[in-house]
Amino acid sequence: MEPGLAFSGSPPMLYVLEPVWNATWGKWFLWHLPSFGAAVLLMTLALTVWWIRRVWVRPRVAGQMYCRGCNHQLARPQLKLNEKKRAVWADAESKCPECGVRHKRGPVRGRARWVRLLIPALVAPVVMFVCALVLVATLKFFIASPWGGTTWPVMGMEKAFGSWALERRAGALFSQSLRLLKVDPETGKADSLGIIDKWGGGGLEFVTPSGEFVVIAMNLEDELLVIDTRSGDRKSYSIAESDQEAVSAYVLQFGRDGNSAFINRNFVEPSGKVMNELVKFEPRSGRMEVVGTVEEFPAFGGPGTHTNGHFELMELPDRVIWVHVTSRTNTSGRGEEIVLRWMAGRMLTEWTETTANGSFSVDFSADGSRCLVNDFVAGSTVVFDMESGQKVDAPATKRRERPEPWGPRIGYAGPGRAEVRAIGGGRDVVGSLAISNTGMTLAATDDGRFAAAIGDRDVPPSWLGWLLGLPPTKGAELRIWDLQKLIDSKP
Image 1 (cartoon, rainbow, N blue to C red):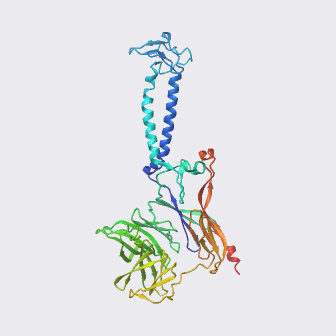
Image 2 (image 1 turned 30 degrees about the horizontal axis):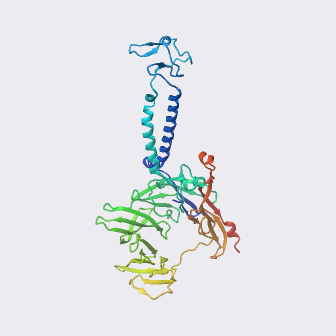
Image 3 (image 1 turned 90 degrees about the vertical axis):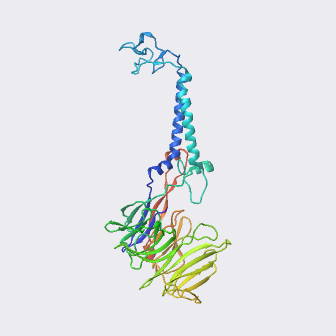
């Protein structure tokens, strides 16, 4: 997962949600199991070879006594029998005449080679066979993927061995914790606001526009976590009722007041129905208000089944209007259908529209009286009246105006590159920013002065990678750009 980035507050501060690896001991052990298996296999093999060589170059006659150090055959002057009929040193001055060492454990009785090799011959194959099974079960040959892959035992092995390189069968360890940072874009100073445990994923809208609160859905705990960015105080609020199961939620967007948050919440009722709710949440007081509720369609994947739905909303001075949007692929496999549902008066209205290649968006008119479904490929717009729930012939309906940043606009322009467009809505590209080849997370202040993204940095190979001649791998770093000179250059 990429770090979350957001500028908020005045003066603007950059808030960063950085994933932290915090796997349980069980997951940690499973992730490193191939390394443990390989280590035990090599150690067992080395010890077995060492023992076989030791036995082979140190022959002994069964029943005779030998020095434990140099394997010299000892005679009567150095030995005597104790009360248990075992050979021990004859006196306090006795020692091996060959190496001059008096071993504390005394001499050792000779045994045939096959007896001395019996235990390693029985144990070593079993241990190595088990280790080999572990390696086969946990490793596979490297498969190139657009999402990248981590080779075992070090990154970058595919550059030396190609498809013969090995990688783990298990997916990467899922990060369930986040480190929250507050960064001053002018000085680069970063202050930690602590670790967020048991996060569980869901949305990158996490800091209120005022910069006062961080609001994060803790799906593993069925809670909303609120962090005061000034004091660092934390409060948790339950997002699940006592009779609800399988609750998940994420912050859909923040309200116009700069602090309230709209939460998209899914849960399962005791009857088994899957419900989707739009909830307005006040982080200062913890108050929650249900704005809209719809029942989700079954979602199993494939033609004719639905994706998970979401809410589109618009705040009016006296109320919040919403439309629930669910999409599904046609049974023919061509195009895509979207199902729109909203409250027209006191009735839940439902419409189904077909779009070309799923290239649609849902918006509202400037006064909130109409819903507009835009099909970009077909170049058409379908308009619905929010009160009556009927289609209307009004293609020229003015859409609501969304605030545009006055300064330079930053946009994703492909792997490893972001574009900086001219001030004042111009389309000319006036600069580019180097970002991560795999990342698309960008953030910019409203005035366009600061932009932030995740960039790539070279990480030197480990000692093993260095011995194999592997090049540096790519790591992540936070990059912040000050575009004040570009703003000042505008005539």
